[in-house]
Length: 297
Image (cartoon, rainbow, N blue to C red):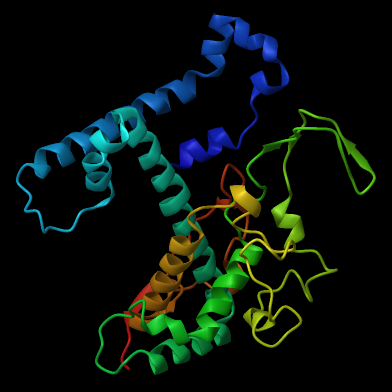
């Protein structure tokens, strides 16, 4: 997935020199790495689908279905081909799984750098979750206001995509004095919007409280507040906004509920490398390493 992200977010010669696409040998050389990765994805997805087809014969009708089983069951009704199932699966892996884990990692980074915020979050999660319960459930997180603010602030500072997915201008238009000709590929800089000092107080600081009692108390990421668009806006906004939000909330809540966290021996919070690597999704150059301790609460 990381290789996919780097390729899709990287420089594409054919986009700037379309004539190269008409030269098969040169085009093949340029796309060699992408072709290798596509073949690898094909092999992995074929194995995954074959395993599900084989296991479907032995499954009881009342067994819980996973995502692939559901797609296979709808093949005849909707005319899904194997390639359709592969494409939808890649979308789920790339847009769902990969982005969620990147945001979760950034959340843990910021909480590690701001221990008082981590403590405040743990206090809320452990207070609201029923005593004796081993894990936080979706019902529990409804009242966790600070948890939701931490997720919002993480998405503001560290949205997985620095830009929107490219859009194509259908007609000539004027945007704030700039002429955008029809056919222009347009990208919106989400990173800059979410750090604009005209809309955010102390924009480079991690301050979840801004979404609770500050000037951004009513700011949300559902596409209506244009200074905060981690999921995009309009008809082309991310269709996984709800599942992504709930997934992040449950994962982060359980991490801070079940464990106390500290840096490896000899490492200080000031030593955490915050360098980003840009691709289709933004991720950290250096992985975060933390030591978990089972919480006594």
